[in-house]
Amino acid sequence: MSDRDTRLDSWIDAHFDEEVSFLQALVQVPTDTPPGNNAPHAMRTAQLLAGWGWQAESHPVPEDMVKAAGLESITNLIVRRPYGEGPTIALNAHGDVVPPGEGWTHPPYGGVVDAGRLYGRAAAVSKSDFATFTFAVRALEALAVPLAGNVELHFTYDEEFGGELGPGWLLKQGLTRPDLVIGASFSYQIVTAHNGCLQLEVTVHGKMAHAAIPDTGIDALQGATRILQALYAQNDENRKVRSAVPGINHPYLNVGRIEGGTNTNVVPGKVVLKLDRRMIPEEDPTQVEAALRESIEQAAATIPGVTVEIRRILLARALKPLPGNALLVQALQRHGQIVFGETIPTTGTPLYTDARLYCEAGIPAVLYGAGPRTVLESNAKRADEHLVLEDLRRATKVVARALADLLGAKDNT
Image 1 (cartoon, one colour):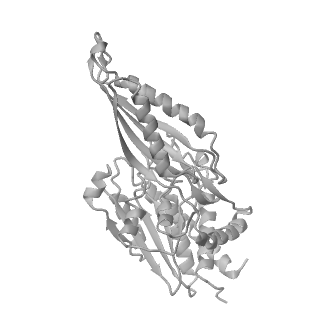
Image 2: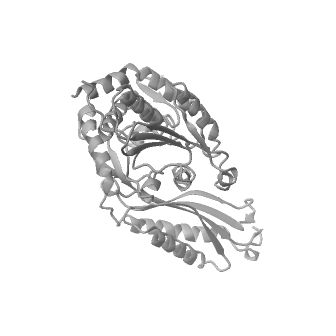
Image 3: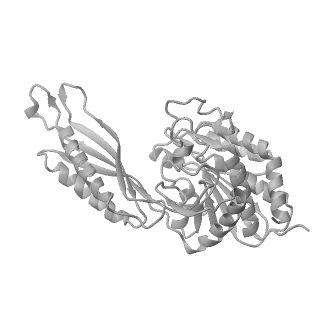
């Protein structure tokens, strides 16, 4: 191990209690999305960073755009750390989270540490990497050696709704244009590809009538049932399609929400379905959406009088590796193997993230950060989400060492 890496590791160990406290403070500010009132968390993050003399640029997204997306407030942060001539490496993590739901044994916004684990909504995904990335950069700066390049921290608040008002907005506004990106993820693998996601809202229209004289109405629920049957039949075909990307299996469709009807004695005149179609990297989103719309319309047409409206809620394209990501992969794998004592593989994931927006802009990106081997282990998006603190410590060391490599930090001897 080089003197440089020993010094990085020692600094992180010496400041690890401070890193845990930083993460606890971030978990303790709720960012449930919906409703999506995320500006207060950005303000708290900026306040904490200011304690180390770091200025976080606050970039509020215009209120009309936020409201149109069904959210309340978004303020994205950029922290620029300029060191010298060379590449700019951005580290991106999102602070917005799904609501905690029920079944918690620890308060979802308590940040409680118990038996080496920190519990709370977003403890694993991805407020953890606010801490990973911040303390990796602090360790790097503590080396006090010349660096060839720059680092930016991007803390954004729109991942749960697709990222267009998070990284997508920062890029479109010309507020940043990094050369390489590391996005929040898990420390036991480097994610280089992920699924895309298409979400549709399907409104099925019929005609309300008294249940005693149902023939005077048109049953929207019956039309919705035909649509559901067609969609679930398509899922059987989806399972036959296999991705060549390790970690990604096949396309899948989920109907996550159904609303309709007015009372038990009324023929339902309207039913609304919301569906989520995961697309493997090999699929063309345009073709997937066209086929889905056709299938829905054909199924609805089997019930005379039923009509449908189909509205796209979200289109998140798949993350596909760009050639330039090899520098990131090699640095993270090299130090991951040393710190974790095992090979850190590259893989794909069936999730979708806002890191794809950097790649769509031509910026190579990979996903790496604190966290478990799988989403299931961490209870992400479920009760008792948690982070193993030793994973946080080790991931911080890996990111700090990788940044030192990428920015040409030498031993100070």
